[in-house]
Length: 512
Image (cartoon, rainbow, N blue to C red; front, top):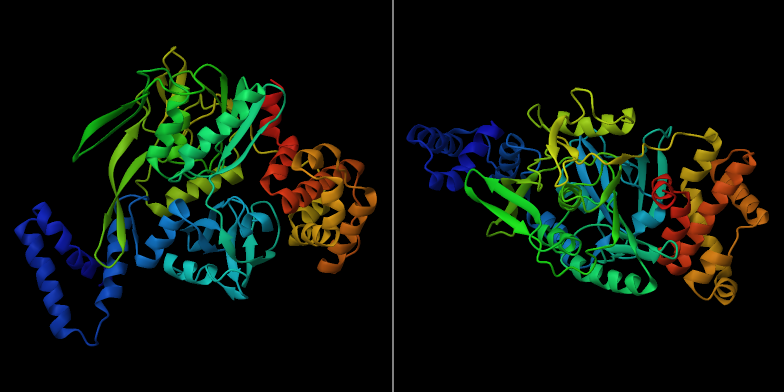
């Protein structure tokens, strides 16, 4: 009944698209029947929202409806600051899936990661309850300084992980890190493509190029997309005048092509782009354009596979529908959109299976899950379409090389809390000894005494015995402690240079 009502509610919008007379009569009559014969009074506004969502779900996975509150929140993430825990999420299989923890926000600082599934909020179960986007926003957003308790399930980690997160003003910067890894290699991480990302990117380049950057590692991992214009402007900095960046076309839209202006500031240096299964949309446009123009080496794991373009249509009450109006194609002609003909549930299940199953081989064999459509780059190299951007160099997830107890000490919220407490108790000494992020990175070492102090703290919090770790596990955990202490002191300026030293993908790039 709700879905049929949705069709009638949608009539206001579709009648101008020359809906057939028969369809018009059916929809008009249904509204009449409900208004005159239904047993109870109905909330037309609420039913309209449910109905619109139901219609869009039968189109494609990326045509979406947002009520006024949700629309405002989504705009704030890309345009301005807001107060909350700082996560981008999707509801998949009736579970809140974290798409990205916003850089510098309280969730990222607490240790929340892309791929985490939020199952408990403030001691209330939220998985399998039919929760809506609106309800998620209501329970996660809130005034700065207020507490929200969440429990998450993390792939390959047993049990529910508990986190206490203090809501805060979410920072709007989308370039989360820009520094020199060595004398000639720079690193820039883009968290999402927002209204000011292009300007932030120029600032980052102007900071690194004078330091001798001849090679750039551009990290787009877990970047779920954002504004197309921002991605186009950034891509333009790497290409020669006239190079094709993107073409867009749809049933009701004329084909439009975007070309490089030739005014970029890094058209000659070496470029490496890092992607993973959470790199989507605008991230894939950038990576695909550079790959097809033979301008960058793409490294990591196959990207999400979103090749559909949405156009926002606003309603008078502040709500919005983002309707898929076209497909985009990379310069070689690829549409990297994954198959969604089996419904939204199967569409997102495919992503989860990729994370769990791990694809380690190049997609040369015909399978149902790996893209096999062959295209050619400008120089004639084979690239693949039909299911995300396949990297030139695939670096799979790191396999577990340490004991379970190590991963428990690493993934527990106690680690975040210990680092926070340590900085609070020793901030004066730390800032005097390490007056800058650079000095902290180079000179600070976590002593065995500090490590043992954390392990005792972990044991107290988890009511277990003090863990016994190998030397290699101690070294790895010490580096994480150092990175988290550094972030509490100097934010991402200290965090990423430390944590990237352990990153297998970056190691593969720097040491090539």
